[in-house]
Picture 1 (cartoon, helix red, strand yellow):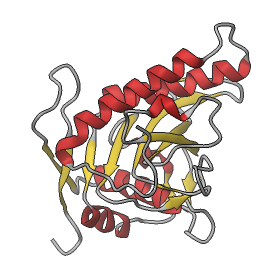
Picture 2 (spheres, one colour):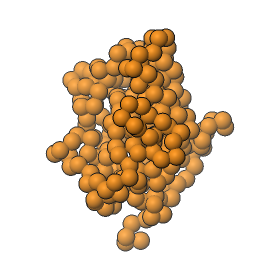
Picture 3 (spheres, one colour):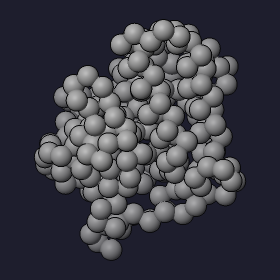
Amino acid sequence: MTFNAQQTQTWSAASMDRLRAELLRGYQRIEQTLAPDFDHGTLMTQTMLDGAQLAVEQAQPTWMSTSTVATVSAMLESPAQTDALIAGGRLGFLVFEEPITLTTLGEAEPDGVAPMDGLVWWAAEFDGHSFRQDSDEPNIVVVHGLSTRVSSEAPWGPSVWEDSELTDLGMFPLPLGMEMTPPTAKQDDLAPAIQLLFAYGQAIEAGRVLFADVDGGSPRRPTPREVAVVLTDEE
C-alpha cells in the first residue's frame, strides 16, 4: 500500500527497525527501475540512492519525541558552524513522533505538500560535478526528507513504496566548513528541519544529548535508539 495524508503514522520508538527495513526495500526497487546504460542523470540518481541506503543501513536509527524536538530546536545557536551537522557522524537517520513541518519538497501527491516525518543524511565531497562519499574532506551534507506522502516529481512510480510507511520525498544540500544562519520558516518551509539538524549537532557537540537503545533491532544492523535526555542550561 502507499500511504497518504489521510492516514496517520503508526510508529513508535519500537518501530525503527521496521521503518529501516521498509525504506531499504524501497530504495532497492528504485535501483531496479534505473536504465542499465548510465547517463549523467542516472549516475547522479544512483549516487543519491547509494548515499541514502548507506545512511539508512549504517547509521543508528534515532527516534525523537515531539517534546524532544521542541527542546532541541529551542537550543539552536545562530549563526551556526555548519560542521555541527556531522558532529554525530557522517551518516544520520532520524524519525519524529510527529511531523516537524509541511514541505513542498518533492511536490507530494495529491496537493503538493507533505509532512516531514524523518530525515536521513550523508556527507560527501562535491567538486561541482560528482560526489565522493569516501573523501576525508567532505564539504557538503545531502539530506533526504522522509514522509508518509509520495513525491510526484520522481521518475519511478509510487509502487516502489507500496509496503513502506515512510518514503523518500527528495533531497536538499547543506554546506560544510562555514558559518551559516539557518533560514526562518517564512523564508523556507524546510527551515524547521534545517534548524533542528543544526541544533541537534550542536547539542551532540556539547554533550547535551543522552541516548537509550531500543529493543528489537536486527542483530546485523546498528541498534535503534531514542533521544532519552536533553540537558538544557537550567539543568
